Image 1 (cartoon, one colour):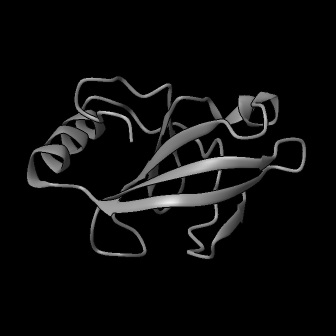
Image 2 (image 1 turned 90 degrees about the vertical axis):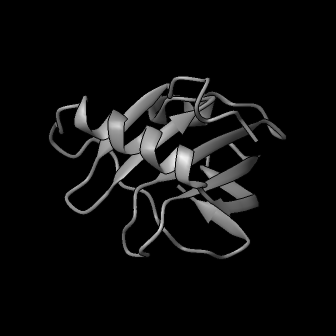
Length: 108
């Protein structure tokens, strides 16, 4: 999984309820990835009370179908880092929403 502190996110998207940090791809580039490519998304704490990073693998890029290959909760240093990023990033209107569904395969 990507080093979340030393690597800047490709894009930060705000929704009405939470924020999504994209690593390895911007949301509008998801369909351009090749089958087998991997990317990571960090979700701010909603609906769950903790920050989490989810690594995905592309199954069918055009259909935006991805397999969740690893999920982990962020450690204290990572949480502080992302909270700092949120303070320095003005929320814009919702750009993208992603399912927080925890099933083995995701359509984003």
